Image 1 (spheres, rainbow, N blue to C red):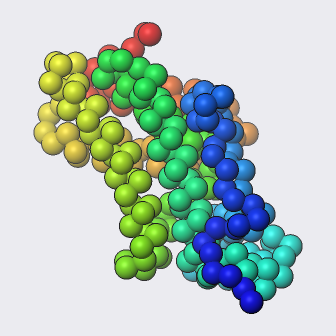
Image 2 (image 1 turned 120 degrees about the vertical axis):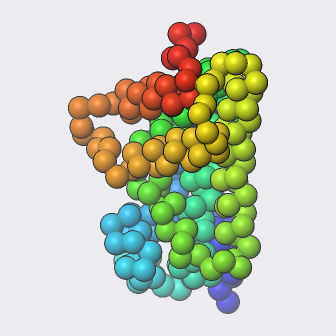
Length: 223
């Protein structure tokens, strides 16, 4: 009898190498996903959540429908697994990036750089976050995802407060509005960046980090 689970038991989502104890948060590596989630990621990116059927995912993964349902309750369960994989990576990468700096300017620069590196490491996975609107509001896994996203936002909000208190940042208006602008700009990377383009992920990340510092009235750290 099929089991109900949101994440494949035979191939669990691993901790991203980019932020593991043996690697550095600047290392750019896509998250290794089970074959069904990798297929769903591509389908959602190409067709959107509503435009993708369970059969589409099974076909792209090369598995039967019973096999797919063995590991996932439904299409929302698959979306949840992808959202949590992506946000877990962002949270770990940003946490490591902030810990790698001491001043608010360096911390903000590192955090924005880390987020953009996540976006460019796997554009398809990063873009799946746009499909959150299709999760039922009362879905407990939605709340878990939103909780992780809020953790990231709170980390950056604390950096802005520390920078303002230290006199390092000069922000006109609401700091939360500035934060939303910065995070929104990072998310937009998925709409225009191409791995085969002229700019490398490191170049794009450094550019966004510098822009974030200008937005808060700071200077680009040289350390």
